[in-house]
Amino acid sequence: MNPTSWADAAESAYPRVYRALIAMGASPPDAADALQDAFERALKLARTNREIVQRPGAWLFVVASRRWRTQRWRSRLFVPFDHLRTQPTVPAPGENAALLIGELRRLPERERAVIVARYIVGLSQRETAEALGIAVGTVAATTVHATRKLRERIDERDQRPRSDASTVR
Amino acid sequence: MNETNDLDPTLQQFANRAVAEIAVPSLRHGFAGSGGSSRPRLAVTLIAMAVALFLFGSGFAVATGLLSEVFKIGNLSAAGSRAVTLDDARIAHLPLPASDQLPGGWKIGQVQLTMTETYRSVDLQYRRPGSRGMGIGVWSEGITVNPTVERMEIVDVSGVAVQMGTGGDQRTARFTDQGATVIIRGFASEIPPEELRALVTAWLAQAR
Image (spheres, rainbow over the protein chains, first blue to last red):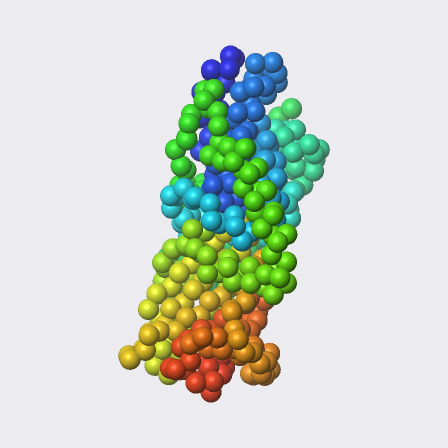
């Protein structure tokens, strides 16, 4: 796969990885910036490193996640001014998305990353393990444990009166 | 190695539905070699340096919490604020009143919801005939908000320590409820201290 075809494949993964970053807790501008940086880095590496062209979605998810964490650290340092920057006009997430993001945020970071990688990015156990640098067994156990927690919490939230109750059932 | 599908199909469906609600901005430049993020590194570095200099030079502001006020009165809408109903605002998981009315004839006119990666907030704007309005802000953990006041005293209302303050033509009550910071803000000429205390009492009784 040459850099151009890699870029095509990566662009097709863009919506899925962008949404995964939002689900991880990134703000829309941070997610877009992290992803942009990841793409640029990927294009440079794609010319020499054949390994990354195999799974663009997984690679972008990992690199953009790291990039976003760096941005998050910086934005915490400059919180009062970070919001003064120009914001892209992206509609706020809908109610189901807000519920999912809120509950993902309550999970420990590793569980959150595994759930997002599995359910949103669509990675297999093995791909998730390689992307996150953990054992396949850990991914399997974390998936089961975090899935159960997430289901319980979302079902519990869903019992509460809401204007347009989402249905997990 | 074959893998069993260990994903919960119901949760998978919900996740698919939820992420579909996340709008995806179009690619800014494309990625085929055009490069360049929306915040070029040089500009980011310069801005960071300017901010750092300002922060170092603003020790007093930091110490007195003025920066929080700057942040608060800075354009919160830029952080993704949107008008919602009271019930819709409950997705922020902050303590909010059960009804849209508070004692004294106050009725909710507008509700603004803000959700960012670091905090969540709900701004309730109340109206009553003959009044210029009254606002109640609720902020989650992750952000410190202090109203600018000239005089402040701490009083006990229903067992909760409430900072009652006045500044300019405003009267404020700041307290913590279920981990959230709540600030009631109104015009001093319209809301005497007794009524402000009554509003705090009503809030504590209603909010859930």
